Structure formats: structure tokens, C-alpha cells
Image (tube, rainbow, N blue to C red; front, top):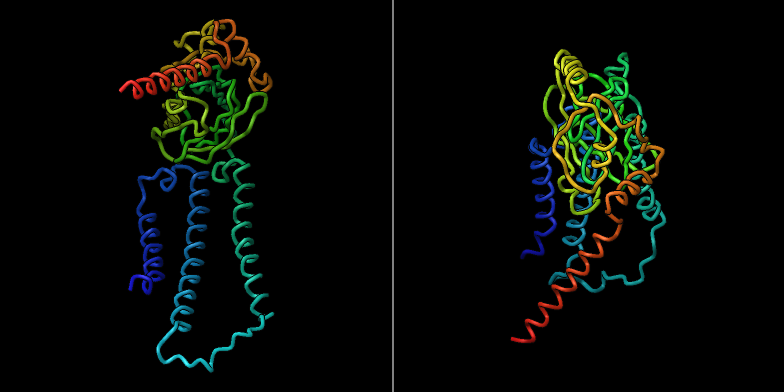
Length: 319
């Protein structure tokens, strides 16, 4: 009995999935607060609707075939023709259908990719604020070169203003992501990737590193803080006048593989090193200077795991 209704159940489950998605305001990707994120949300929903239509058509055809051609008691064997010849017309149709599907999904995807390479159209008349976003195990460093300000694990921006993030890394390959504001962009030592973002309304949005870079990456988060224009300008002025200067010694300690709290400085590390060019050599030299050798920590952890396994094995053997 269940087999007969399986195609119908699958279709119903698909529709329920769609209904659930339509009410997922708490899922950050489906609750965009910026033009970049809205564009991506629309593309995701277009893909989901498109695939649901395909799934419904396939399951309806599947149900039709198994019902029409099922084995039944009054089946006349004389009607059975085992020597079936292929239909060129049908083969052309089911070859063209996947091609049409790929085109229908590819065109909007490519358009979105190119669109996101540019500043938001809504604020094209405004000059983007440039902020360098640098990841270092396990923290985020934000540099405002024009304002001569640096923040750690938070970034303040004005609402309704395009921001050009120049994303790089001091060590491990990372991925910069603020789900409610825009898509991900990789950060790698020795190179810079550009990402335009904009917040449409004031608020604090969760940012993160979505690329695995070791045990501390789960804590490699930051606050993306959108402020009203006046509030943002006041913060700039206050920080420039009252925040401490970033010394080379302080910055060296930021290169060590550990987490830190939010910090604010009245100058940037760009005067010390440019990680977009450096290829990770600076961070490695600093770690050697402070006695942290790359790979030693991993070897010690492996030795500890092997030791624990041996102890556990001996314990079981003893019992």
C-alpha cells in the first residue's frame, strides 16, 4: 500500500519543504539586510522553485507510468510486445530537457556573479568606503586606511553606503561571510579579493570565518555593525582622538594562533605589513620568534591521541 502512495508522499514532502522555507525568517540567508544578500536570496529561491517544479513533473510522470503499466489480473499477454524499438523523437526530447534546465539555471547565476562584482546600484553615486579585512588564526582584523583606524573582531560601517572589503589572510585560507549582508569571499595570504557589501538598516549582524582553519575557527567570529551616518562619523572622530596606537609588538601578538576580544586602534597595521603581498611569511616568522613552530602543536596533539588510545587499550586488556 505504501509503495502506491510513495510518489504522492514525495510530492507532498517537497511542497512542505517549500512552505517551511517560505517561513524561515530566522535563517540568516533568507532574511537579507543588504542588496548583495537580497540578490543571492532571490537566486536561491529561484533555484529551489525551479527544482521543485522539475521534481513534481518527474514524480507525476513516474506515478502515471507505474499506474498505467502495472501488472494487473486482467492483463492480456497478447498485448505485450517485448521487441520495443527506440523513439528518436522521445530521445531528442529528453536530451534537450536537461540542456534547457542547465541554461535556465546558468544564465541567472552568471548574471548574479557579475552583478555582485560591482557596487550596489542603489548607491552608485556614493564613493565606497575601503576596509581591509584580514584573517589571522583566529581573529578578524579590519583596517580603515583612509581613516587610519583598525578594529579587531568587529567592523563599523554606515548604513546605506557601499563598502569595498579587500579580503586577505595572514596565514590560513579563510572565508569572510556575513550571511544577512552578502555572500562569502575567500581570503588567502599574498592576494586580495574584493567584495562589495552594504547594510540597508542599522543593526548588528553576525560575521564569521566559514572555512575550517583549525580548532579555534569556531570562535573566529565578528560583529558587522551598521550605524546611522551621524553615529558612524562620531565613532570615527572619537576613535581617532582616543583609541591607543597599534604598536608593532601588539600586532606581532595578534599573529599568534589564539582568540582575542574586540580591540580598537588609532592607526593600521598596513604601515607594518601588507598581507595581500606577504604570502604568510610575516606571520610564520613572528610565530618562530615567539617559539611557536608550525606543525609542532599538531604533532603533540597526535602523540597525545596515540598515548590515550594506548592507555585505553591497555586498560581494556587488563580488565
